[in-house]
Structures are given as structure tokens and as C-alpha cells.
Length: 437
Ligand SMILES: Cc1cc2nc3c(=O)[nH]c(=O)nc-3n(C[C@H](O)[C@H](O)[C@H](O)COP(=O)(O)O)c2cc1C
Image 1 (tube, rainbow, N blue to C red):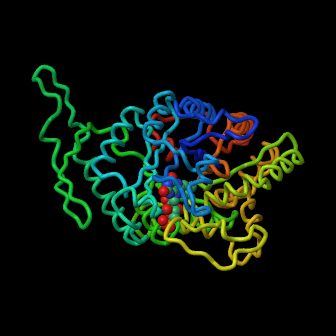
Image 2: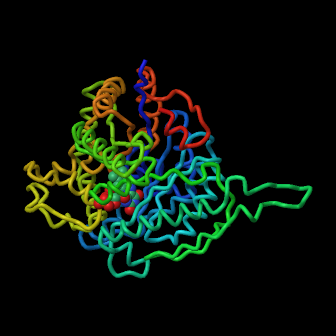
Image 3: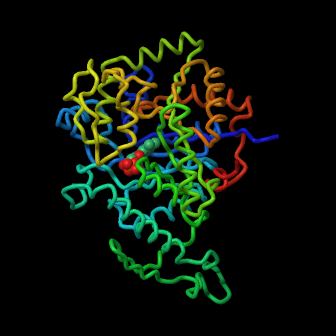
């Protein structure tokens, strides 16, 4: 019998929860407890991992001011994902935790050391979402006036990954001998410098952490441009994407697999996850009504536009909500997300674009219905695409306990009954769970 299972992961960030909504958590999640409980809930549902988004600035593109972002708790405040990953990882035992860290911000030695430490603390369940940053506002927090162009960011990131890989390899797996009799903790002949001197980085090494359970963290990536896709196909264990419908999903996955093969990698080593934002109800009508209610409010529309403004550095407040965009827009930032959002040529108004597919930003498919009907649709879509998993989230990444429970205790059991997702973890390491099927 062929294994028709696919993987599940969750996309979130360390920002205020759904604080305005009637069933929110309260808007002050900074002690991390709400998110720790979220990790436990998703572990109950056997998710492969949860992934913590990150940006390194307070957005101020929407309305040319940071007022909207701060007044609405929209992408700011945003706390650091690495300590949260530790807290989540240490309060769970099976689920993977993936933190976003930018190659623009961390010196490679610091990133390798931090990742290795977290991988040991979580007993081999850590992943790194490799991003190059996409905003001038972020670059300005790191001594630059402007973001380097995309080509150069990826060229730097290629060398960066090379450096961190060398650092992880600077200790042999059996370097720690713990020989009490002879008084040897680590065998110095098995630990060496890397002496890297490249175009952008100069790092001596060795790393000063012991080899972690996974040797290196799982690499997650979200490249969307041709250059970004090559980067992802070359380095990533998991790729996350927002695609346009089943056809777009299939085209993206086929393209990644072709690029991986061309680069000499086995495409089956790479798992592609597609973002979705299911809306679940007791009945089909109930779910439809909820979807309309949630996606047509002014708050929703503005939050979506503020998000897309922040990540593209295009001020969407300048356009009429009830007209189509006047021209095809371009960005040096998140180009894939922009293209998906603007649906150029569709004739849709900006308000319709914001609502599309449950928050045009992050959903690859429209999934509205009962847990049973959404599970069927997910199964059918995955069968057509060929793999590998879904990354569940909410339109502007705001989450409350009720939605978590709808997914973990409503949708997932339906998927499990259909044999579409795992019912138990069979491995300790995140990488092994990812490649299990
Ligand atoms: C699901 C998903 C999650 C992403 N998470 C982040 C993130 O946390 N931080 C960030 O700076 N960029 C994030 N990105 C942006 C990507 O890293 C990448 O810059 C973007 O998809 C554009 O691709 P390109 O660089 O090839 O144009 C994410 C993209 C997607 C689709």
C-alpha cells in the first residue's frame, strides 16, 4: 500500500495574540506561556514542527508611519524567536521548533553556536529558518543604509551557509570522549579550525560547542524568486511557500525538485510545505459565514495591507480600497508574496485582494468548511501536488486558543482517520521525522 501521508507544521510569531477578538488570550504573551502551551497543543496533534517568523524592525511603511503597526499590535512588538524556541522545546519532547534568524544580522559564528546550543537543549529538534532580510528598515539596524540587492543577499547567504556548515564540521561526531581515567573531556585532534576567508566572511573557528544531536539544525527556507529557489533547492531540508491554488503548488514543487536534481541533490531530501489558513465550522454554512465575517472587516483589510506594506516596503495605504491596483508592483523585498498577493490582471479590488483565499498573503488554497470536508480537500490537493506537507497559519499570524483547538482537535483527527497524517512520532530528531515519509 502506498503511503499517502503528508506533514503538518505551524507558522506563527512572537507577537500579540488575537488580542482584539472575543476569545483572545489577552494581548500580553511576553512570558511565553501562551506559546509554550501552543507547542504542547500541536505536539498532541503530532505536528512536525512550529516555525517562528521574525523581522528586525518596527514597520513604518503603511501610512508612512509606525503608528498603525504599534496601535494595532501588527508585526510589532515582536520578541526574539530563539529564546521562545528554547522555552517551547524544553516544555515538549517530540515536536520540532524552528526559529527565524537573518544572515544579515547574526555573525555566522554566533548563529552556529546559538543553533548548536538550542539543538542540544531540545535534544535534536531545532530548525533554522534561513532568511536574508527583506527591508531597508531592518538593514538600518545593522549599520547599512539600504538592503543589498537580492542577488547579493543570496550570494552572501551562500557563503554564510558554507561557513556555518564548516563550523558544525569543526568537531568530529566522536570528539567528546569523556575519559575520566585519563582526564580527557574532548580529543583535541578531533576539533579543528576552519580558517575561512571568503568574499564576505572571515572566520577562524573551531566552534566552541559540542556536536549537537542533529549535527546541524534542520534548514528551512522560503525562497520564491528564481535565485531564492536555487538557494533553497541547494541548502534546505524543508521549504515553505505560499502558492496559488493546486496548480501553483504543483508547479512550485516540481520546479524545486528539478532545481535540486540539477544541483546534484536527491529531491526527496527536501520537503515542501504550503501555507494554508483553514476556516472551520460546525456546518458548511457556519464556516462560510465565519469566513465572510472574518475577512471583510475593516480591521482585517487594514491588517493585511499593513503586513504586505511592511514586507514589501510599498505603502498600500496610497491605493483606493475599492479599485484594482493601478500598476504591477515590484519590490526588492518579499517578491513571491507580493506577486501572489497582487494577482496582477485579475481585476480584483484591493479589498478583494486582501480577503482572497482567507487573507491573500499566506494561503495557498481556499479551505472553508467542516473539519471533515476540509480534510477531504487537503487530501485531494496533496494527492494532486505529490507532497509534502501543509504549514498552517492565520492570515496575519494572530492566533487564539480556539483556532488552535479547532485545528488540533477538529481537523487533525479527521486527517488521521483518513490516514493522511501521522498519529504518533516515530523518531526523536526533527530531521528524521521530516524524512520519515
Ligand atoms: C511561509 C513564509 C515564511 C517566511 N518567513 C520569513 C521570516 O520569518 N522572516 C523574513 O525576513 N522573511 C520571511 N519570509 C520571506 C522569505 O525568506 C523570502 O525572502 C521571500 O519568500 C521572498 O523570496 P525571494 O527572497 O526569493 O524573493 C517568509 C516567506 C514565506 C513564504
